[in-house]
Length: 76
Length: 110
Image 1 (tube, chains in turn blue, green):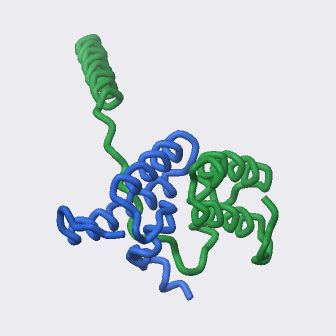
Image 2 (cartoon, rainbow over the protein chains, first blue to last red; image 1 turned 180 degrees about the vertical axis):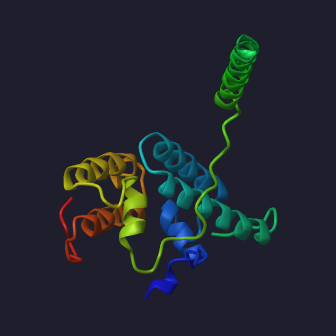
């Protein structure tokens, strides 16, 4: 099945984004940023660019989620 | 007759071309680095050899020793005990197994 070669990876889901960064459902945005910083830097130094991309995409995805939640929303 | 003239012109042309070439090479070397574009999306639902190689940062044709070395290095950067995520760690382990041609084995010891 060679026709799958050109297909882009599936879009990242919120669940996968949380798994990648290792944050629970009710995590605060600060916690997410902290994990992102650690993982992004570590993979930049010693990991692979691919993993770094995934970490970046995960944060990007959750950023949208948290922005939609609105400022000052109390969750958890 | 006109040969020395031609020879002279040819040398001059070569010198100018060389000078231009060197200048172009220097500007090329000094160009600002183009930032790499991040890969899109999440992980693939079924890991391919291509994805496994990307995860470990090796070529698809990498030898077993290189794969193990890369696995160790990438795992250190993402170890769950050191603040990494279990999900990424499992992907890294899976990538190694895919590259080494091992069947998917649950509970592989790190």
